[in-house]
Length: 441
Image 1 (cartoon, helix red, strand yellow):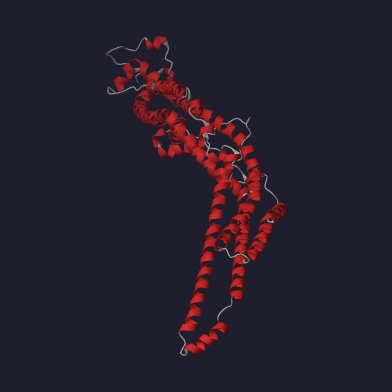
Image 2: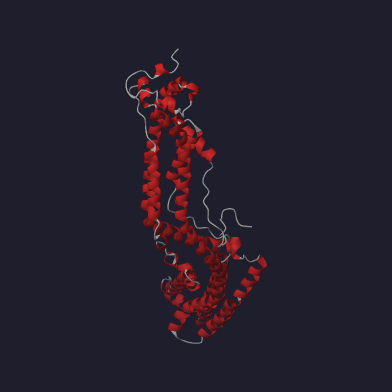
């Protein structure tokens, strides 16, 4: 089962489709925001405009990889793999302890000085094969999913144009529903303009054609803007380096990890060596003080051979220090292996890969903004914003002439908007009282 916080990567054949908010939700929002909207069809149109203005952007969301998609290993499998990974470092430890014992036979100061670092690097290198294998095994299912992911990204990039068209089509449909009753009233008002002016000489009959023409222009802009958009985004170019191949994954993910671990181990050996040297120098200073600062120099000098450490004591201390440094390198390597195993667990690996997918998503969306950002802004932010302002003005004008229209309809037999030709012929073209011709009581 896929973790709830991850979106599973869809199959390559699965069609991409955007879900727009339902009408009732947008109507409720618009009626609260625009009390003057009145009817539900007007409120839905305003709601669709606001939804497109806020949400119609040239961007995509790339699904993340779930830990369950990475074939997570069982606890027993991890324990067996860990024990196997410790075999080479343990062998290296035994070899380094033997080398420490042999080191005391030689009188080479250089060999004694570089031994701790040789032991550290040798033990470190003994762990690399199993760590590399662990990272590779963890990466294989990742790259299997990436092939599917690339297809999903390409379809979603292509779907940006479909998303824009869907927002445009749904909003245009809402516009047609909203202005249909308005157009009926305006058609009546246009036919009866002379009579309406007798009721209100200052009457202003608006026109909906500007709004309708804008939507025709939006469609042309959208289709023109999307020409050649498919070549605007190059997934292979935008992929972060670690996701381009398994070899680069090793170079950019496993490589830095190993480099950091080696640096930490070498630093630990350096600090431990310095403490041992500082301790040896302190012991030598104590010997000199014992001989040179007594009250009776002769007595103290005679006691010095029994109180001062012998040559064999120094050799034993040096051997123990060398063995301890070799063991320290081994412990550090064991910690390194454990950390590597934790990093290659499914959840940790998913987090690493998803951080790279987030970088990819950002790059793709930047490319989309460069390619069609201006088109979306001109249509859905600026264009729809202007249409909203224009429609609200239209609603106010309709509200102003609705009263005279209702009065005039009340005077027409049956209140029929589709006035018969014989009745229309009786309407005076200029002058005279139209209202007086129809049943003046």
